[in-house]
Picture 1 (cartoon, chains in turn brown, red):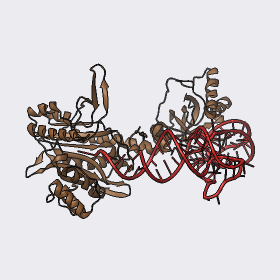
Picture 2 (cartoon, protein in one colour):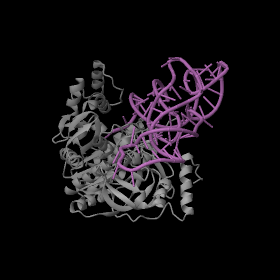
Picture 3 (cartoon, chains in turn red, brown):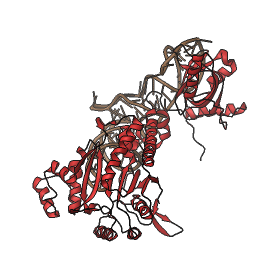
Picture 4 (cartoon, chains in turn cyan, green):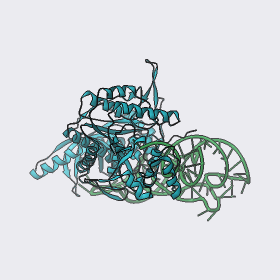
Length: 494
RNA sequence: GGCCGCGUAGCUCAAUUUGGUAGAGCAGCUGACUCUUAAUCAGCGGGUUGGGGGUUCGAGUCCCUCCGCGGUCACCA
């Protein structure tokens, strides 16, 4: 790293580093002898206070407030658990030590303080500092203490500053962590095994999206970053696992928006001897359980809506949902030409699409999706846009598939998995034809996956949902960037 | 890629409408102050107004252009 160019603040603070070193004091010592976190110190004090005894602590944290009042100074430090007040007093510390604290400590520094706990006149548990030590000098001052950091660009590019100055932001990521743990607990109790499958894949699949391409030098070949975990997880069912899940990043080479980040976290779960109705039960129970554990309630607030996650969730077929909103019955308009005519007849505003299935999907996203505020399963999708799902026994145009929606957000996708290898191959070929016709998002053929199915895969239900969007809902954040620590920022394309 | 908006001190914001010496709070520096909680009080520093170009006697302000960010459309389960 080049020698930093210090601004006025950094220069002033760095002079203190040099002065301390000249006095034989290391401003970045290797360790602390902390005995209590802020929370532990307060708890120990409250307990001792009842018994009439005293508590001696050594605490450590970042200096976040400093109020000088002549021969005394109040300060607050913040650690991972909270804040704690420090009381520096000339009479306690002695002239030299007290002056040194005032001279060498700055907001943002990490400090260690030792002393006995007492209660100030306002009742706040406080450390009466008898000795203190710098643990790490901060050269750059923290943002403004009252407003924190608000500039979104700096908040995302320098998330560490956002986190240190905005406690709400820290809370979001704590909730995110708890959501993940609660999901794992939930699935563990149901006998699911957590697995890890390749991120670098020779053939990508499991979703319709353009991939990121990378190169393996040694093998002299291109590899793809996975767009889904689906095809590898299903191979595990062939191998004999009954219940597996994976939580990990998928990568899709698409645009950025408040709902899309090129890398995002997904859970996929598969249950042998289950079907898509089992996956509905899993989704609604899991989401409600997680909300209860993480938020203490199944009633969440999202962007002004109060939403109850208590099962059972509403279920509606895609046919009925579209009929309700557009008056078109896709079972009657069951060919591309008929559906196109029905759309034209009603002068609906949808983009032109090349096939019946894609036009159904377009009608749905345009007219139904934004209205789905309460948790809703939309079931029975067009076969043609669902190449990995099993057909409905009584209708070859449709598959046993659902997506679920809450707060107008599309959250997850599930189906009764297609396990007929010959039919799967035919579906891949259908995709292949669409690719050749210019659809960059159509599936490539995964021959090894067909080989796996040839060995036999049991009837299976599978589901996937986005962890980022789930976190948006549970923390009431309007943008996916607020729930991803280091989000991709908009890049101007030339 | 289209449209709309934003970019001023370390941070949070004024001044842009109507061109006329760029201000405030916090933070910083100096001083006062032994129970503060955004401590208070007095004083002092701090700016390439995102970069470049243009119009003008004069540009933070108007125009062009480039950069960065947000929203939205397109795209995207």
